[in-house]
Amino acid sequence: MKKKYNVIKQNSEPSDITDDIYWGNVPEIKIDSDSYLWINNSYRPIVKIKMFHTKNFIYLKFKVYETKITVKHTKFGSEVWKDSCVEFFINPFPEKYKEYLNIEVNALGIALVGFGKKRGTANRYRFKKEEIKNWKIISSVKKQTTGKHGNDFWELYLKIPKSFLKNCYTEYSDLKNCRANFYKCGDETEYKHYGAWNKIEYSVPNFHLPKYFGELHFL
Image 1: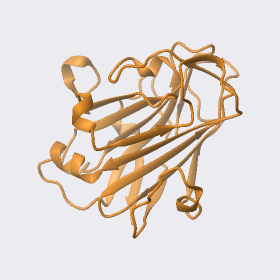
Image 2: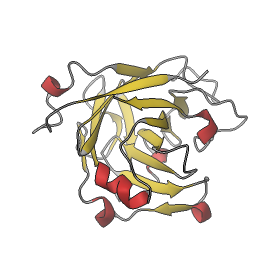
Image 3: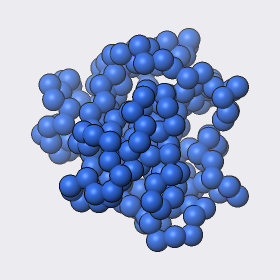
């Protein structure tokens, strides 16, 4: 059974995407302790996720309950999934396209963004930093860290222009019924872990399985 999330629409663009005033009425979903796969350990950090959209942008907020993190990668497009990382995969037009976006961001706000039909370097285009210059990514973590970062959680905010999707999909239209998944991972953290909002039924770790994406309904 696929999970569903209604993405509400706000009338105005936030002047500060980290201001709680913009997030108070936004529905919340979670990657909880039952959402972790493949690794049989007790490390299962809760991740609270909120998402809304406006005429021109998509906004995301992740609140990740980790007291200790690993952040080693500081270059755009690097192997951020090895760090304490959250991810958002989306196919905005599943009835027309098989291509989906993978947006992976570590706790420092360093991103990797790809596009294609399948997993693997040969199958996916990786965007350059200048190609997402109109995005905004803000993290509460401000420096490379291995261990405690001074709080019980870290927060990450994303502002993604809808015009970016127009560059990816030639038959772009208003967002309505999309397919997507949200992830939490850390391949080379103190405790390796893989969490997914919509459950993946596969024998080995793999987030690049669109048939297990949940449903996003843009209101």
